[in-house]
Image (cartoon, rainbow, N blue to C red; front, top):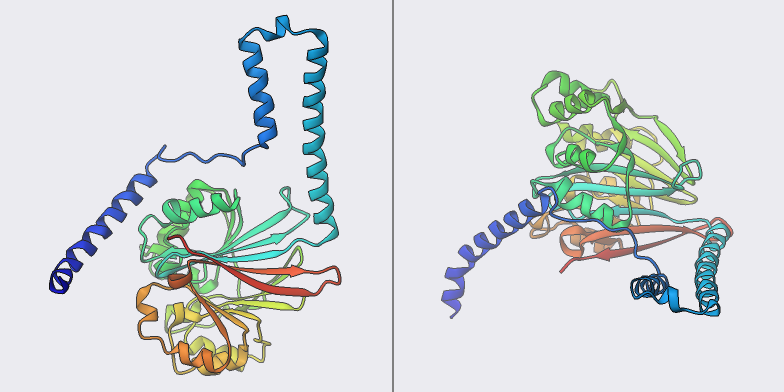
Length: 370
């Protein structure tokens, strides 16, 4: 039986992969799925059902006046209950400042992070920032993975989309995403633009060409760019605008997100040249939460980088190959640094929750779909 298992393992694995491709292809077809709004209270559903049954059975003609009065009173009571619940929620939200959430979606060998920041200047009360949207593991990443996940979490639009650098596994789902959900603006680096000018027929070139053809807003940012959004202070630590780097990975954005006294560092695919530049810059690199650079690649300067950042928690977005031979395991264990991995744990969420004194508490959650 063991030999039969070995013989069958490969063809069964191939068949399963093809079935997954087929299901994803079907799910991406127009009309394959319907997205419903949050369901109403069951009290409302029951009241509406009663009204419909009464109407179609002609009960409204035979019902005495006192019965209609009772029905109206019941409906009014239900409306007041719903209104009171909404008011309670609003009061709670006013008393305790809303939390900032960072989600790292499970996209295989790729990267897609979502930052939700409460922001009173926005019509919906929050600013949604996405950092990268790409994968080498999923062809239909935008329509088949990212958009369904966003809809389930209640996100209807992206205010800012930052693409860290030109590699396909960080941008492949961008155009599909923008076809399904409004994306207000795209931000890239000078190195991204220069790469597009040099290789206009590259994936990055196609992305920027299509973005401009659709008259969508986009901007170019470099080291020193800052933005204050709600309770979060954003700062781009890398790359320098005029710096020419040998490898595209080292042109990746490094984004600092400061919320109260807690800090998150998103690193894209930076490797040794970028790390050396950041270490020599004199910038404060310490952070409580850090994205492991380049999906968890381990380089000569990885230890130096870890010592500079000193994180409490690291997040790793990767496929299966990155955790088979895993040099990070021992390094992180020795330093009591907790690690979450999308391949193992599913989608990762980090929550920064302020208390009434304004101090931040840090907690994290994982969501694995079995």
